[in-house]
Length: 118
Image 1 (cartoon, rainbow, N blue to C red):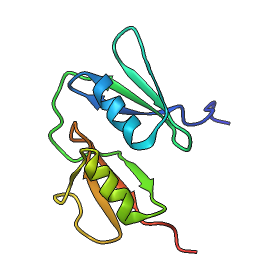
Image 2 (image 1 turned 180 degrees about the vertical axis):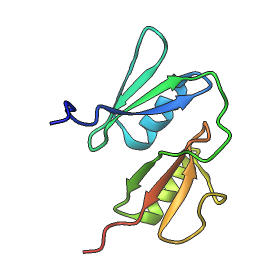
Image 3 (image 1 turned 30 degrees about the vertical axis):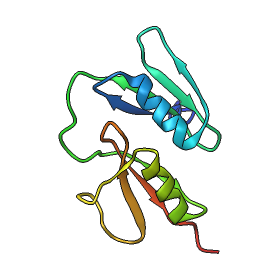
Image 4 (image 1 turned 135 degrees about the vertical axis):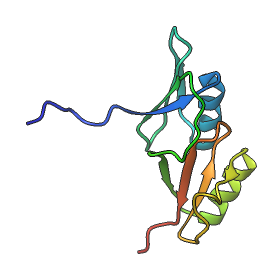
C-alpha cells in the first residue's frame, strides 16, 4: 500500500479572485461553494471531484497540462449551454469533432465529450 486514500480535489489556479470563477463553474455544473479565510474557494457538485480554486501569483501562458473532461448526455446542448454561460472555444487546442475544447472565463481549458456509445 502506498499510503494514499484517493483523489481529494482538482485544483484550478486563479490569478484573479477565485470566488467568481468558482461561481462560474457552479453555474455550469451546480453544487455548493465554500470560501476559506484566504479567499480560496471550493466547489462540491454531484458527480464531480471537489474543485478547488486557488489564487496564484503568475499568469498562465501555455496550454493546461491538466483539465476537466465533462461527459455530455446531449453534446450539442451541453456545448451550447457552456458557450451561453460564457465559455469560449479553444480552437488553438483542438478543432476536431470527437469533443469540444473550451475555456472558462479565466482561460482554463476544459473539454465536453460526446456521450458514450451504447
